[in-house]
Length: 292
Image (cartoon, rainbow, N blue to C red; front, top):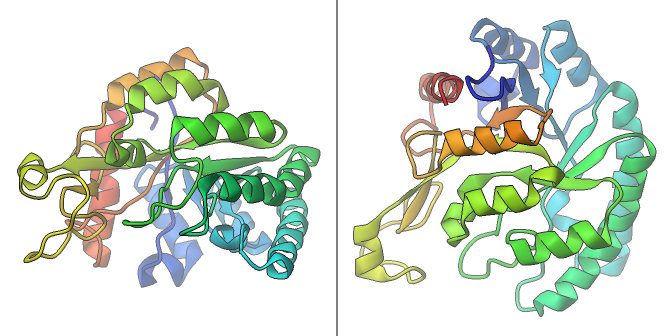
């Protein structure tokens, strides 16, 4: 069943826990029985794609190879990873994969302008390969771990630049949870970039004002552990358990005639860690999104 606003099909990103990784056929059957319409596979092969098709599910996205190392500081290793990805995009597109998920890495300690230059050089041949086979790279704005936050295409500044410098075969994976974490207006961002959005992650972020008072935005606690899937002042959650404004998101996507899926990315300390908990988190997310 689709969302109330926009009628977007809903899927989820395949997680790394045993019940999701051990047997894709069983996972696909569970997804179909519970009303999901697609799965983001992560790293995939032709048999994985066929398994989803046989179950009546769509292929949401597949991951690039070693996505975080495509901008590796060693030039020779970087060339090898780029070549492997060019070949993989061509091969996977023939199976029916059309959305290739990635992040844009950056070397901590290096100037962001230099990291950006390397990113453009590194991703250009992969984006060209995708465009040549009618596929698209979708870039997620995951900023990386504190304190470095070295990744690129996490804020409007570098998203805007990269979409200009890599116009062919390049688009956005819109994940509002990362924007909230960084303090970027996630609705304003979507309105500016919606024409370039080809994939959506449904994940939310909870903010803790009391922790911000105690610690500020950037310093860790001297006495307490950080949240799993978060830090002291924020944490990722299932949709509806944070501050993301989902009805506005869906309304904006609908107005732009968004034609992709909405894919739940389950990263929530209240649900992850057990099969029962993760299944509950996915089902709760689906129910919430259907009504948004």
